[in-house]
Amino acid sequence: MSEYDAIVLGAGAAGLLCAATAGQRGKRVLLLDHAPEPGRKIVISGGGRCNFTNIHTAPDRYLASNPHFAKSALSRYTPTDFLGLIEAYGIAWHEKTLGQLFCDGSARQVVAMLLEECAKGGVTLRCGEAIGAVDYADGRYRVEHGGQVASAPALVIATGGPSIPKMGATGFAYELARRFGLKVVQPRPALVPLTLPAEEALFRELSGVSTEIVARASGSKAAFREAALFTHRGLSGPAVLQISSYWKRGDTVTAQFVPDRPEGWLRAAKRERPRQSFRKAMGEGLPERLADALCARLGLEGEIGTLTDKALGAAEARLARWPFVPDGSEGFAKAEVTVGGIDTAELSSKTMEARKCPGLYAVGEAVDVTGWLGGYNFQWAWASARAAGMAI
Image 1 (tube, rainbow, N blue to C red):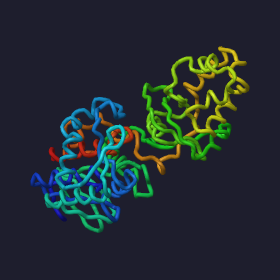
Image 2 (cartoon, rainbow, N blue to C red):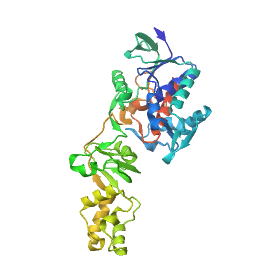
Image 3 (cartoon, rainbow, N blue to C red):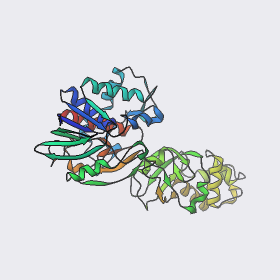
Image 4 (cartoon, rainbow, N blue to C red):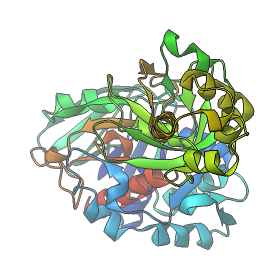
């Protein structure tokens, strides 16, 4: 049996930084992953350029049963801290919209950086080895891996959630947590395209059309102004992916089309150009196919001057909160992350250690903390990993 100070399960973003942090503090660390190579989700993230953090990171950009839980870790390891590491390795980066930071080159540079950090800490990395039995006795956790057994007084669950199963993602973190008596908040897909029922076929025929909207979901105060994309199955694009994290089955998603229009804009168009067609007035600023579909649904036609102010006011109101009732999502296969996970009530917000299981830690996506689209989930991975790595 091999003995270590800590065993980290999962060589993704959180597991790599946690292992490196503990290793550089002089701890003997074993990092295990069943995938053939480390950092697989990092490699595909951000279109292969890794949206590694967001400069606007704040606790209110995260969903969790306890909205205060993430504050401690996020305040102690910030986007500036991680950016300092990126720059120390000479990795060129750029800021996109809404505070999103990306590598100029390849996401593989981030993986290489984290592996070098692990090497500096003397971390033993084993990939492509199935994890067998995990148990606890006499103050030590025992882990079977690849026909061997390792033990340590500290065990870190960093195996993520079930999103993107083709990358090897599973619900292993939840099984392990339950085995040690920790509660799990029911996981569901997040940052995921939504599907529309057959009666919305008019919109499903707009596949490939994109437009800026403000997306909202009933039962939530969240609102996101970004692009929406119509697909052959329903709705996608950044605005929809964002609101999907707040959406629950049965909720209505509303789209505010042409969000810059002032109140009364159609009635003003009637006064200014009464001979203009309603379709032309309504469709300004919208893709042609989408304008046609909306016009058909509104059932208004002819010159705008022939329509009553009441009818135009109703059209404005509908365009400002156009309702869709999705019948589902595209599931974990297309979800970027997971809402839910190991209950934060079970963990210390300062160290990420389980309150009732000394030496057991959970970090990253395995925990019930889910960020917005745009680098927030990576920042949670870094911050929670750092918190645990400093505490081991």
